[in-house]
Image (cartoon, rainbow, N blue to C red; front, side, top):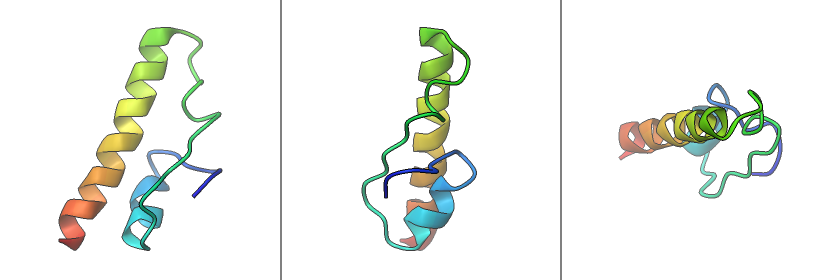
Amino acid sequence: IDGGVTPETAPLVTAAGANVLVAGSAVFKGGTPDAYARNIAAIRAAGDGALRKAA
Protein backbone atom coordinates (compact mmCIF):
# COMPACT_ATOMS: atom_id res chain seq x y z
CA ILE A 1 0.00 0.00 0.00
CA ASP A 2 1.29 3.46 -0.84
CA GLY A 3 0.05 6.47 1.07
CA GLY A 4 -1.48 7.11 4.44
CA VAL A 5 0.78 4.62 6.20
CA THR A 6 1.29 5.59 9.85
CA PRO A 7 1.81 3.64 13.07
CA GLU A 8 -1.97 3.77 13.46
CA THR A 9 -2.85 2.49 9.97
CA ALA A 10 -0.01 -0.01 9.48
CA PRO A 11 -1.68 -2.74 11.57
CA LEU A 12 -4.97 -2.30 9.72
CA VAL A 13 -3.56 -2.57 6.22
CA THR A 14 -1.17 -5.37 7.20
CA ALA A 15 -4.01 -7.36 8.74
CA ALA A 16 -5.97 -6.81 5.51
CA GLY A 17 -3.16 -8.46 3.52
CA ALA A 18 -0.74 -5.71 2.53
CA ASN A 19 2.83 -7.00 2.51
CA VAL A 20 4.58 -3.85 1.30
CA LEU A 21 4.00 -0.52 3.01
CA VAL A 22 5.25 2.75 1.52
CA ALA A 23 5.38 5.61 4.01
CA GLY A 24 6.35 9.13 3.04
CA SER A 25 5.21 12.05 5.15
CA ALA A 26 4.78 9.87 8.25
CA VAL A 27 8.50 9.08 8.13
CA PHE A 28 9.70 12.66 7.73
CA LYS A 29 7.84 14.21 10.66
CA GLY A 30 10.24 15.56 13.24
CA GLY A 31 12.86 17.01 10.94
CA THR A 32 15.89 15.08 12.21
CA PRO A 33 17.46 11.75 11.29
CA ASP A 34 16.76 10.48 14.81
CA ALA A 35 13.08 11.35 14.47
CA TYR A 36 12.97 9.64 11.07
CA ALA A 37 14.47 6.49 12.57
CA ARG A 38 11.91 6.50 15.39
CA ASN A 39 9.07 6.99 12.91
CA ILE A 40 10.27 4.11 10.74
CA ALA A 41 10.68 1.87 13.78
CA ALA A 42 7.16 2.72 14.98
CA ILE A 43 5.59 1.90 11.60
CA ARG A 44 7.61 -1.31 11.30
CA ALA A 45 6.69 -2.43 14.82
CA ALA A 46 3.01 -1.72 14.24
CA GLY A 47 2.95 -3.71 11.00
CA ASP A 48 4.98 -6.58 12.47
CA GLY A 49 2.65 -6.76 15.46
CA ALA A 50 -0.33 -7.23 13.16
CA LEU A 51 1.49 -9.97 11.24
CA ARG A 52 2.28 -11.85 14.46
CA LYS A 53 -1.35 -11.66 15.57
CA ALA A 54 -2.51 -13.01 12.21
CA ALA A 55 -0.09 -15.95 12.27
